[in-house]
Image (cartoon, rainbow, N blue to C red):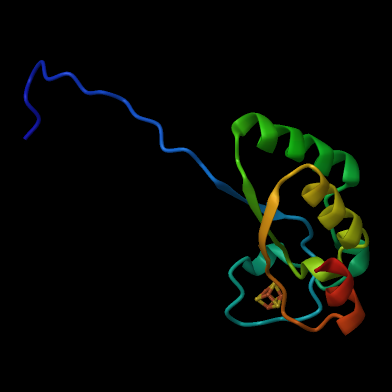
Amino acid sequence: MIEKNKKWVPFIIPIETANLFITNLCKSSCSYCRVGDWVVNNEEKAHHMSIKDLDKVIDWIKISRVTNVQLTGGELMLHPDILEFVEKIVNRGINIDFILTNGLAPTELYKKSS
Ligand code: SF4
């Protein structure tokens, strides 16, 4: 029971990690997909986060003192600028906790992004 006139002290839990959904394109169609209908398997209907939007997101992340990001989608390795995204994020001093992928992209792409 909440006591009347009791003073509550607000507190802030710092957010350390941000999830970046950088594309909704995926060539798979898993029945258990956590993002469901948001995912499309047609490149013409796909939406990829732009480099310009990534710059804005990174600015927000830095202001918010978020230190880590997790990259996901869709299948983020199908983003046409995935390597540039990784480079930009790392160069701004943000840790990439993980990239959530289905593992179906070419091996070379994984090597270049690591
Ligand atoms: S690979 Fe991932 S994003 Fe693609 S359909 Fe399966 S669960 Fe969804």
